[in-house]
Length: 425
Ligand SMILES: Nc1nc2c(ncn2[C@@H]2O[C@H](COP(=O)(O)OP(=O)(O)O)[C@@H](O)[C@H]2O)c(=O)[nH]1
Ligand SMILES: [Mg+2]
Image (cartoon, rainbow, N blue to C red; front, side, top):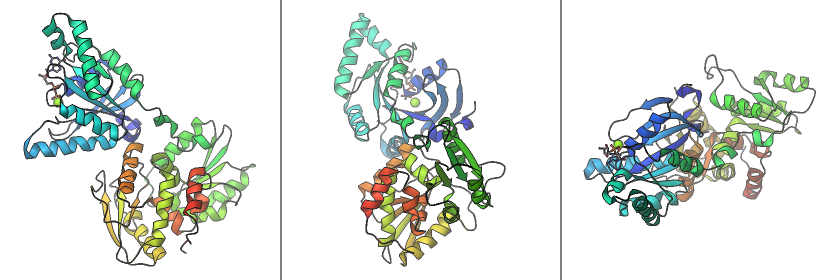
């Protein structure tokens, strides 16, 4: 098992926060020492969070995130604090570490409130309980009282541990497992709409942009999800789609196409066969397809001089006719008939302030976790800026969005409600 076997975006991200010297690093070390398979310690500088990927039973692949102390002062301290809090944007479960010899302060209380308001599951850890026991002379009762007090002050479940003596970790892992949101497995890529024995046809162009010797991650993940449903995946290039469909002998449940050949796939797929795109599947898997469908309407409402942000999560090598840099701007200019100004954001950085934009067009987000993508959608929504993704935007400007979202009831409803808006082209 290497880190590459599971894309980092599908690992559960567990982040540790707290004051300097509360014992965050010691706790992560104590957990990783017990669970032998530490896959990849990724070191950062002192300002940067440190990521450790490992297998944690019974949770499976996780990433532990060790952060800098939140009580840091001065200019550098502010930078550390900012970087630490940014970790929350891709945290699935947060841990607030409290030093038992110091107790809970306003800092931890504020942190607990902030994390809860983001809807992220959070646990308290009371570390250095060995010191508490030493102080009292009557360990267990004193410790129970300290835990109860910390729980009241934080408004959280609090687990007592000693990283030094490696005590309390079995219980901590149990509490962590219980805190993991179940919804993480609920969001299948396509498995929830296919039944055992269903045929699903995937259309994957093999062109210059395709990587050598393999399929791209969204295609691999979709095939895997179809197989997990005991359904049958049939993979073809766009040129052989018609022949593939004719030779199947029965109607497929769904045809899934790369959005760049959507028009050809739509022409070759009979009207009574459901057709969608990988981008739309991932829009639904990663974020909020209905919100993105609503966002597509904004393309038709753009005015000359409007600013549009194109955000791409991965920093791939740019093709001459790059989808984000060249094609999407061209299509949006054509569809809106307006002179639009485009800005570009690449990689894991998403602008803090998006209020200046009339629209955000985001990539499919295959490199982002569901939480990261939802956070970006939420930031757009909070700023009152419509957001759409590549697949949804392309389907819209090509006039095929209605067909591409038809297999998904919520998105279909959003489309219908978005309503009488005439489609360009
Ligand atoms: N007595 C005691 N000391 C601990 C415990 N955990 C950590 N420490 C000590 O506290 C100091 C800070 O620990 P560290 O893990 O670096 O804290 P961090 O800054 O939150 O990452 C170190 O000197 C540790 O040895 C514990 O459970 N008991
Ligand atoms: Mg540390």
